[in-house]
Image (cartoon, rainbow, N blue to C red; front, side):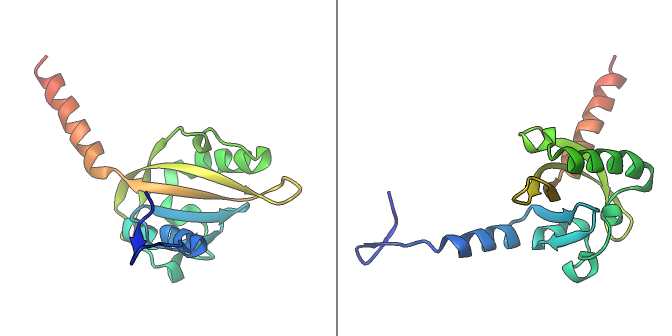
Length: 150
């Protein structure tokens, strides 16, 4: 059923809806070009990672990737750019450690969406990320408690 105002159905402004959804959703949405430079950083990314958009845009994704994981990240990222595909864009969720501006390590789950030009070349990747640190810590504590009872 379509909502109505004084008997008339609301006519959604789809472009405005998309812009607001991406800009203001609680999940982090980050776009990086083929070289891994951040080109979009929404309000959710500011909340999750602690960097303002002004601080993040134009910077490398390294600002949110813990140093020991960078080599593995860039191998996967560059392969996804080269191939134009990622299993994490097909519904699989990747869970990894990430960094906040203050240096705190958090746990995030994310999916990615490759962006291509008309010739099919990968321009960059957008990721939707969610901070799951609390759940990860609870699961770790639960596993430790179960192991201690054995």
